[in-house]
Length: 348
Length: 167
Image (cartoon, rainbow over all chains, first blue to last red; front, side, top):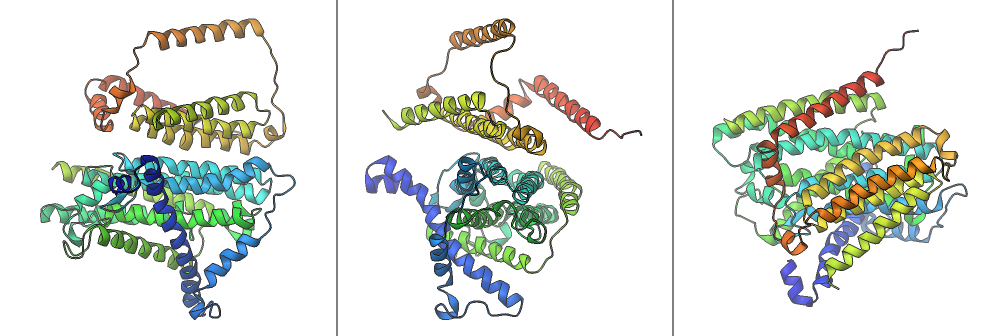
């Protein structure tokens, strides 16, 4: 797609900018859809109907919400650090957005075809942590500070099991490039890494228990990194008002929201690329190709976004000590066993 | 000027500007965040030199690990946020001797090293496999020694932090 764009517009710089804007357009449209989906799914889980008046079944409600946010007054608390307070939402969103560069949306589109794609995504997510700490400190508010510290501690702890789970998939696929990992899983649903990847049946059967565990750990850790329920302690409203974004209003608040939604898709897309074939069709060569690839990646990603919404309205929130217990004493030992076993099976 | 040169100067300005803020800022939290910009710019320089693995590891370890730890330390010790950092010169003569010696050594190292030009560097493809292979063959002993050293530091830190108070 990059060569095509350079040929189309002539100037390479313009083509690069166009390439970089594609995920942004996707995120904006996706955020509207998810905003609507979240409210509707929540309502139906709780036996309500949610929006019914703005358009057919309330489909225009997200647009109304965005208009409302645009008109809101932008309040900066008098005692806040103005510079850091303003910069924080951008750090949080940019830290999430740059991760999209290494996601192969289809065999024909990947923002930056990096050799170290997944390592890069893990690395840039640390900018989000710094941005959250920045927002909490600059707000000059106890709840915001506590929320941001909790959030940072949570993301840093859950990076360990998720990185180990990523390692399992990387060991099987033999590449850190997400596009290569997707290519590796060619040939239908049973060649996906979650079922042991393409290979002899015996190897697949031996690998499957470990890859399944790694898949669930990655998904759970991803939900924790996106600060979603049951891991939404950073914005636990019963104790911390709204957490790190307590003092934010208007478009700055919207940036945090957008970053959270983008992060939800990002963690789903990482899980899909590593374990569920990425842009590969589940039916082998049927319904595959660059355009179907984009459809499959987005469809699989959206399914896990739906799972995250579903979880939010199903499970209660964990306590801080339980949260750390799950990460360090349950997931990390499980992942060490998985890595060791997968290594043994692959060498053997 | 091509894109490469423009981005080089852009990151150079960002690096020096944020480093100056780190040194001269009276607010310790702002200094810490300026340090983040400095570390990110250094990662950008590694990437510009086609050392993609080193650049990403720089981001992962320094921004994701060390900087977040510094921020935690600064934020949890709340007394230090409101106190201004002392500026001005103390112990001028030892400071001049130490800094000029270190500066001289660094300058000597910079001038005596033959830096590979970027045209040559651009041809280098995937760096991670080469680095991994070197670590496990040529540089196996230094690599293992460094890992044992880190393990010792980790155990020591845990021991000091978790020491039971006998009272």
